[in-house]
Length: 312
Ligand code: SF4
Ligand code: SF4
Ligand code: SF4
Image (cartoon, rainbow, N blue to C red; front, top):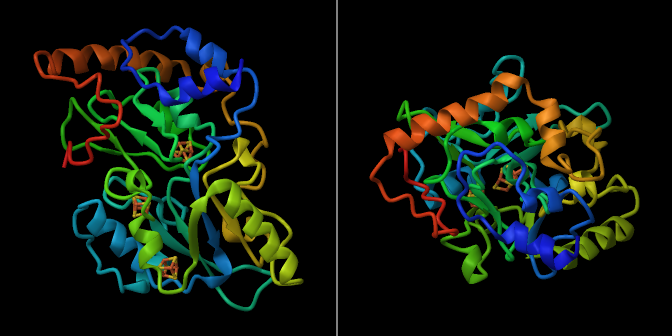
């Protein structure tokens, strides 16, 4: 598949029907290598600079008009929270969270901000059978919640466990995740709220390709400071947000066993790893969803809408 065709596919998010068959576009997505949009933006995250102040979480909360959290953003007891043996994850009410790690190879704790990494070849997008997702030329992975049927395929597919759901409506749960501040900032070339708010300049916003050069230069110019790896340069086909660290990435909670190629090269791969009940469920759910929303405008032509407020 040519890059042009692949880009067209990534950019296209015409709302699909309930068909579970692999579309020609998704078949085509399986071949070749997409390096990301040439001028796509990204964020370089330097973990050595983060002090765990959670200002970025607060900024996201305001920018995305999310509900107030149970504990204020200056409460550091959240770093001790464990949920089913796991550290905090992003939720439908918190599109970014900061976690604390105790790396073996450092005396100091390490803080890490987590949000969608805006993959070059997003598994969420590939796994979504109603094409709710879109990778924009600016670099964001956004979604149209009016199309989402809440099947959770993307939640299972995402290698970073990012998509979350809101269940405020029984028949209409929809995806919620970081959208790179697409509507309010990225579209106009402005940095995301979390990036701008950080008092430590942990995050650098710019063209992904330029930031990658900066990342490697920073490693070279500071011998001994960083591990010689940019996490996200190659992982799962490359991510829009990528990381520098002073400790091995596994000590900062990163999955270092992810493949260098996209996590789901094609829909057939995805169906092979998902239990059958989950492959049938979306089709059933779509039926319910269509009945429940019959007569409502679905805005199928509105590719750019991710409709952040729906479901709140
Ligand atoms: S991090 Fe997950 S939700 Fe974000 S673009 Fe990648 S696959 Fe999709
Ligand atoms: S890019 Fe925007 S939506 Fe994503 S975590 Fe930052 S502030 Fe939140
Ligand atoms: S605002 Fe910056 S320093 Fe504070 S927690 Fe977020 S990334 Fe870390």
